[in-house]
Image (cartoon, rainbow, N blue to C red; front, side, top):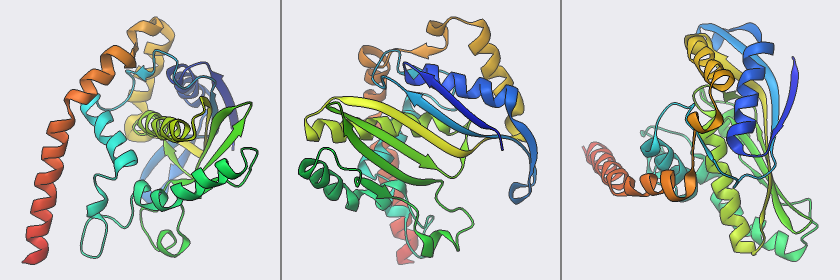
Length: 256
């Protein structure tokens, strides 16, 4: 497999470089589990300053509502109630990591030089028998030069439909942990052993790359602070209402 490494000062810049590299250097291979072809590389991208504006790429599936909901799924576990026998899911990322957070905080307070602050997301007993096992495998945090750096490892990552939302939410989690530790946010490194685009999204990837190459950055990104963040916040009541309705419906079905 091709190994690709890119860096960018901000998340959109690194993400856009990764998309272009996939489009131009990815190998076209079969994806028999999903009955289609895929374009694939192994990708590592580093965001030098994850909080640098503009923080939001326009080149992802969804808008402010979808991004806010996903951040709430990762940080707050708003869909954890869907886990369990007879329900929808066998896991969420939040459910897999949140019990490990006290260890992460305590370990980095114990020894800021530690290399042990790792959250393991993969659960062998569940994922080895799951048709849709967790893509996220682990997250490691290191304090170096007084900043909290984050290293994410994914076994598989959909470049066109999922990657930006994944990285944006993981950076929000990184900031949350950094704030609790009282240190600034350092670099964000995103490693996907299979960074891919499914055949059904080849045209979408082409459109993304065309925008990256032919439009100025301000036309394919949004400022987060003072603009997109406010729009995301305005969607929270509607998200909570929708989640509440879904939970009530699931509770009713469970009781029947």
